[in-house]
Structure formats: C-alpha cells, structure tokens
Image (cartoon, rainbow, N blue to C red; front, side, top):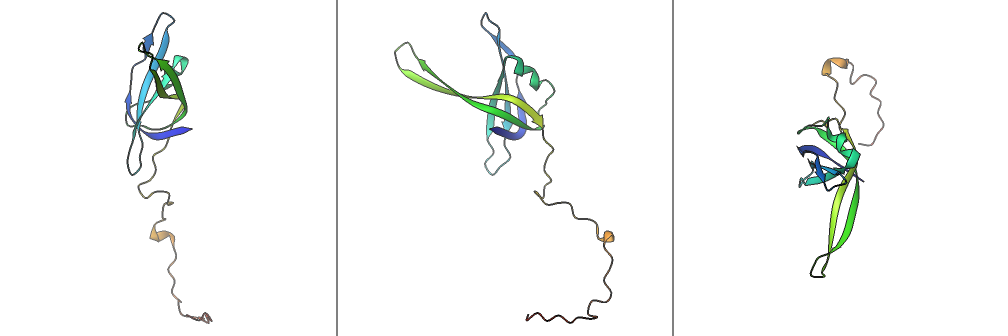
Length: 125
C-alpha cells in the first residue's frame, strides 16, 4: 500500500527503552477533495530514510498497516493500529490542469488557406 501527498511535518528520531528502539514520524497531507493528514512512522534503521526530506515536498510512501492487542491493568482488551513506512520517494508535482499533456504554442501549426477547396464530404450532417 502507499500514501501520496505533501510533507506537513518531519519529526525527530526518538529512542525508547534499554534496547534502543528508534521511531520517527512524518505527516503527509493528501491532495484530494477532502485532504487527510496521515501520520506514518518509520522504525529502527528506516528512520534514516527521512533525513533528506523536507516540509512541502511531494512524496510517495510505501506502507504496511500494523495492529496490536493490549490488555490494560483492569483486564480490558484494547486494539491499536499504526501505519508503518518502509520506503519513501520524491514525486514530481502534477500540473494544475491534471493529467492533460502540455499544448504546443500556435506558432507550431501551419495555417490552413484552402479550407473549402475539394470539399467533397459525403457525410449526412
């Protein structure tokens, strides 16, 4: 799965516990009718992948959804989800006109002078 959008925030690498577990978060804002702010976490050696990315850049992040179960001290079972990134790449911004190719300038076309000459069109309309 993947998430694509513009980087809103890149967090600092955090280290947890005695085993040195590392985590770094990034927030990407999707560009759709209802933009979403998606927080993706990178863990362990993948935290370094974010070093060369900055706020405002368009990116595509390959992700895995992670879920876990936890039983609190009162014996209630809780479930948590996370979005974990494993690859990130820069994406070129789309043109404002969407997926339309650029239109060449009018100077690139030859003018038509004999528009009605030889007009033996047999179409019924």
